[in-house]
Image (cartoon, rainbow, N blue to C red; front, side):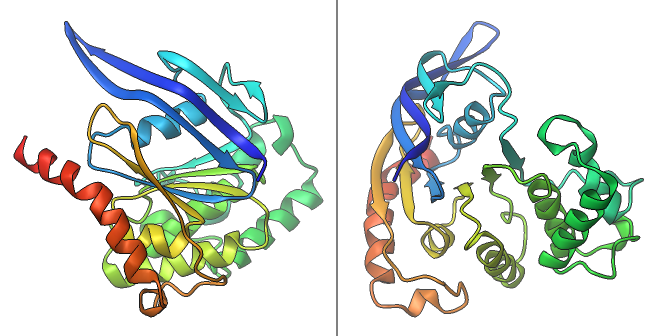
Length: 263
């Protein structure tokens, strides 16, 4: 698979006063074009830092970061970034929140007709038809997440970065939104990098799972998930082989989780 993102020997140190925090150490990894890659690891292992680097929001301390074979030297306008918080603007309707990226210029600049068509398509895709004129305060948590996803997809980014977007939701709603995400992603050819603490979520969604060590984050294991698609997050844990993937990933992760809990 042709890589769209390449991390070559990436290290990153943050400074807090006189204290040095070593977030990443010599991370080398590729993200394939059109791949759904999940990253798991203990808290503080640099998972979010990798997403921030891919978005061009910060630079590596050492190493090289390539996007489509070229060094990434600034903000990456080819990606969309979804965080745990939906960050919807409370004074804008669902429709206006989703349309926000289309008014920022660049590749997203569209004529009025194409803009309306694209908005309607994305709103229907995430199941928010009929709620276009509602405000965020009038939506459930799941509907807010759907609006956030539509806002990220509306300008058709090449890469979608997701930082534990469903982490704060209850178990049932998480499964619903995992299914929605897979339904939206499959067949688009888009690349998706998904950070999570949840091994079941990672196996349910991903083509590959990267396991990070405790800080400073290093790659401990890479597991290719060869469960058939399309996948149903409600039943996939009962598929043959699911338990073996879970056991191998947990074996790679367990020692670092225990170390973190004892720190």
